Every structure is written in C-alpha cells, then in structure tokens.
Amino acid sequence: MSSMENEGENAEHRRLVKALIQELKNQGFEILNAESDGYEPCSEIESCFPDVKSYNRKKEFAVFGLAKTCTDLAKEQTEVQIKIFACRFMYKGKSKGAAVPLCIAITKGCEKQLDDCLSKLKLNRKKNIFKYAF
Image 1: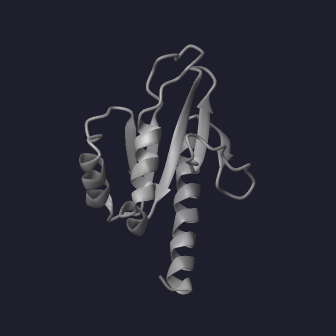
Image 2: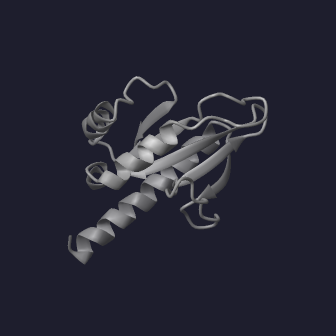
Image 3: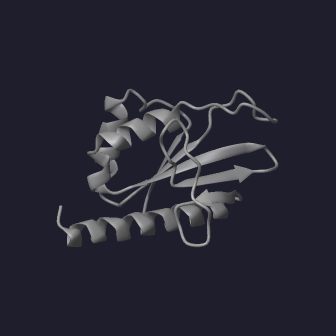
C-alpha cells in the first residue's frame, strides 16, 4: 500500500472513530477512552486495542467500539479483534454476566464485507454486535 493510500486509510479510520464516538454519545454513553484527539487511548485487552470504550453509568456496562475501513475488513487482525470483543461479558456491577456490546463502525458500502466477516467467524447471530455504516 502506498503512503498516500495509507494516509487515506488513516484519515478514514479517524473519521469512523469520531462518528462512532458521536453515535455513542447520542445514545447516552460516556466515552472513557478512544483512539481520537482529546481522549486517552484504550487499554489493551487480550493483546488487542478497541478504538472506543464507553460506559453507561446507570446500567453499569461498558461498550467496545471498532472502526473498520473496507481494507481493514479483509485483515486477519480485524477478525482477531472482532472475535475477542464480541465474546466478552461484564464481570461486575448491575450488568454482571451480560454480553458486552460491540459496536462496529464501517465505511458506507462495506456492509456486505462486514456481514461476510461475521458469518465466517460464526458471529453473525450474536445479539451484542451492532453495526453502523458512516
């Protein structure tokens, strides 16, 4: 990938992260960490980093967010991240035992690629995965 393409991918990734932050804020979540200006980056979880971590204080549950471009969806690293974040459960608080929601922000037009990826990982029926196309 040329540095120009790479820069385009990075800019698109940043745009998706910002859109996801806004979406989660609109839903009443507090953004704890994010791969975006003005936020501390997320902590590592099982050797992967989410792009966004948000929290609902009333219900005491966290939400992980990943931002993926069309190119990202073809990468093995993306599959690893989705598997890890889609299979987590709350370990304390009012929502203990509940599946942690995973919000995946993708570039509009990549919906089929994301659906194919989730099917391949056998995660297409999980109720805790939320897809957003921006």
